[in-house]
Image 1 (cartoon, rainbow, N blue to C red):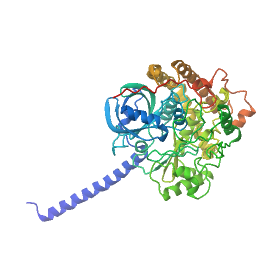
Image 2 (cartoon, one colour; image 1 turned 60 degrees about the horizontal axis):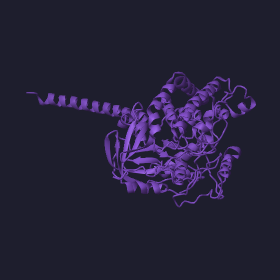
Image 3 (cartoon, rainbow, N blue to C red; image 1 turned 135 degrees about the horizontal axis):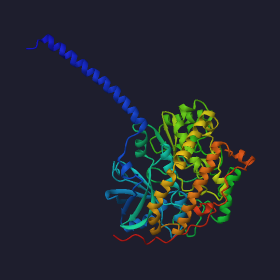
Image 4 (tube, helix red, strand yellow; image 1 turned 90 degrees about the horizontal axis):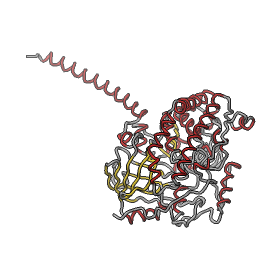
Length: 537
């Protein structure tokens, strides 16, 4: 029999072992939490939905009357209940609504075109419901992009360079069993995205937009702002158009002021605060204004997460210090933003911070540190304005932002600029020179060529698509050649430098940007009626 003396000793030893194990466990858990917070969680939908070697097959089941009602009232952006099958897996009571800004209002005014982009919310009507862990899926319609490929290739470049960005894939979309069209499927930048990228980290997400478009709330409210009418047909909503009565030519001339004067006045006397304008825009351009959080309403109104006063003050403090280049690494996620800058500037996306418009990006803040996430690239590579191919192909890599000073501390600091160039070199050598771009381009063509050819709602004909896709390949090759020269110093990397000496610029005279699609100044969209495409159930 063991004496009580020995029992006491054994008990002490066991307790000591338990205490040590608890301490080790706490340390390990803390380390694990940090790792997860930095690296994010592995999500099932990464492989199930966004393995780009295999496309997505989506069938939307909805009452025909409800579908028609949603089409005819698209500008309201109200959610409708539907069932969705994705690669054979069924999801019930899912929310779906049309989405977009210019594309939404343009299509809404065209009685022969119902090819809207869509937002799919799996948890809209069923709390906690996801699609393999994904809460929001975006289906982009390819508006103003005859190539159908710009966004996919750009998001592929973000992925290659390791920047925080949405996942992508192509989707064959059917409605009540009938093929509706090929869409670009994107991971919604909301809760699931934050879990995948930042794990248990507690941060806040914003989508600033100071273009006069609506900041949509959780219920999808819209202020029905109407951008210029670019196609025929009557509006199918009651929104007032501040451009009313203007011809297409007059509208285009107004928009050209963005580039020439850095300021744009709406015809109704209002001002698009995000246009041009370093220093305007209620915070959407991320320029420091003052210490009053109310001066940054465009940021708070776009919040995708719950935001309190302390969170607002953290963002304002960060913008203030960034504006004075103070302790930058404390207030900016420098490494990710430099990766973002390399891909974003390569894409020459003027429908963004780098083109005079303070929108089409996400702002993420955690612990007072700001990060930039990419969004909306259908108008990349000269699709926003009619401009000559040479200026687009040779777009300077070292002074690309016209509506914000947010990136200036990085471009103006030698060490950060060198790291930025390092990532740019990695993009050129690893993505283009290695053959990855060619492989990606050929994969996409093999996946969507036949889908585009059979697409009953496409806004471009198949022949136009082929010409546009071929042109995009040449554009990307020319752009890579120019960037390669700018990095090597054989081509000036600033606007002033190129104005002073244009002799070394890449000759892009064989390029016709308009073929790839244009929002302004390009050839009109060729649309085909799709108002009778949904079968009765």
